Length: 487
Image (cartoon, rainbow, N blue to C red):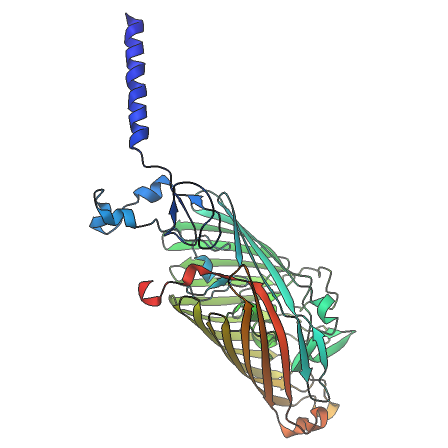
């Protein structure tokens, strides 16, 4: 008799289990970048081609503030997809679209040009760009040549439980192969060395390894998080996002003349940064190596932590990113090892998604260097980029105070400071667009306004340069395509 009772109980338990399975909602699959896509089976997103991921049970059952969505009989609930936000590889509490170079921020509405791959809960994001081009600078200190500035980057994140994450990043450049040791022609540019001599009127090539970093982030509560970032090389909390990571500068092959006043520490051989984030406000501090990379571009410079910096960042709206920072750089220049530098920067970055495949991004950056024995010099940069479909228009204005010794002038002019103004206009037309890789044909023209005292070095004509180029990069990830009034 006991055996019969046990069989009956087992049968009832099995029937209850079968009924529970039958009543449970079927497994759904969605796209992390297009949460409106819902499928009954795994596969690829029909909009962007990313692998679909399972919708977790707690995402399906998560209550909302809308009573209609809480009502299981409401049709509205069926239409409302789960809200899944991709996290930054640096800080699990930040959206991916806010992430930029180092630990810097761009506006949350910034579009992403990249390729995303998912490995379970792990994410790999690939970025990069290369500019095969012909460039001509018309002065006696200029040059004309064919070259190809380039950079490539990978970001990987691995969740550690629900509220923590490990991040890994690597960035590389093949500039030394395409630009040579002297770098590419760029009138009035200064910074770093070649064959033991100060570079001038050239942009130095970047190292083969520009970033190898690891980060750990922890979310303590909804609005409060922290992270630790360690790079060798890496980027300290000083300045705006590096120019190649600002959308307002991303289509311009040239580095800004103000690079060494604003964001040149984006390649630093040794950096540790601790950051605290509360809602859209961040405060962070770094210790790092103050010396700029040497001219041996394939090696790893000796790591040191002899400098420090602090930065405050604030994204008051999804379209705006603000920062102010200050740093002490110990012996940054190889040719003047006794000189130290205090650098102060402030920036405003504005981005506006204008609709499907249309965007406007602008930046205003100010930077000041206060060097031992040379005093203070300033720089101001304004740049903008308007993209609509296959067409992109961009512009840049700079005012930089360049010391004579950095321009490698005669001894009589070495201690003078020369104000340099530069205006750039450019245009790119995409020949291939939106199919994974964008290939654009572009051109730009730069005019300089400089003191007449520099004529004997650069000639009597107005210093100008022009270039035609191809811009090759990953296509836009369509997370921002919804019109602004629907976001």
